[in-house]
Amino acid sequence: MKRGTGRLGRDAAERRALLRSLSTAFFVAEKIETTEAKAKVLRPVVEKLITLGKNDTLSARRRAASYLLDEVAVEKLFTEIAPRYKDRPGGYTRIVKTGVRRGDATPLAIIELV
Image (cartoon, rainbow, N blue to C red; front, side):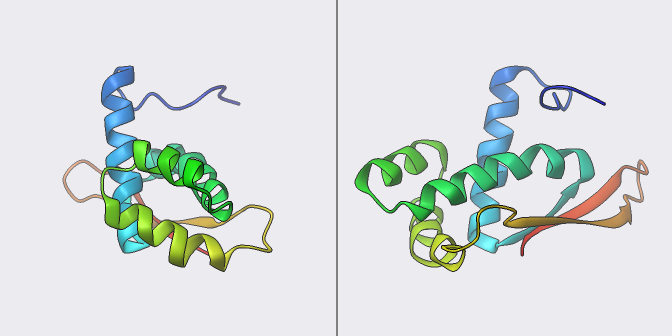
């Protein structure tokens, strides 16, 4: 079993930038298709942000806004997505494998809200 987070072939700053943009896109669209490895690394980030969104305080909004790149994503997280899961203790997302990419046979997956 692998320990820690997936590195995705990037250094720390590139990985953080990738996860910030993926999580922003995820909250705007509520579902994105990406590689299976990126989806697996993105899942804990998104779940922690949804848990943060369940506590709708100014501090929580500022913490989410400091991570997400778009104010629309922050607003949607706190007004639409997080209230949906008020009574759920976790497990807000699912990863569905969709096949392989035609060019390089990389496994693809859809990460979506449950």
